[in-house]
Image 1: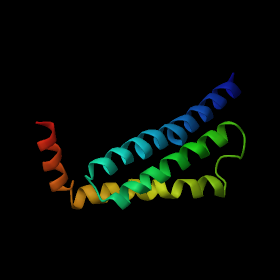
Image 2: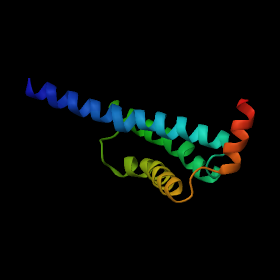
Image 3: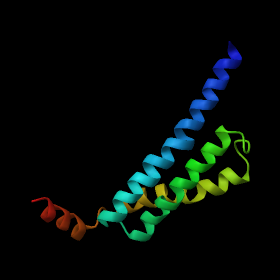
Image 4: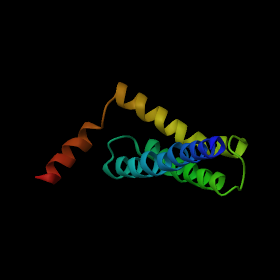
Length: 109
């Protein structure tokens, strides 16, 4: 029973941070901020690169291609890490691009 609970914990940990974060935060948020130009495009590209890498490493670990925690997982996580870090700092310091916000408001009317 204990081994199955540990296996379930490990699997859900890989599924959440190792798979869903790459899809939701990396790909989806990166794509939306890239298309809308709410943040600098180069910054959004980090999410578009990091999202698939984190997702791919999560899938590789789930299917036993390599173990969790080696160099490959760390390398795949670097772009996503800098995407999340830069997005948080950028929005705290600068906020969204005001001209993009005005353009989006004008398009929605």
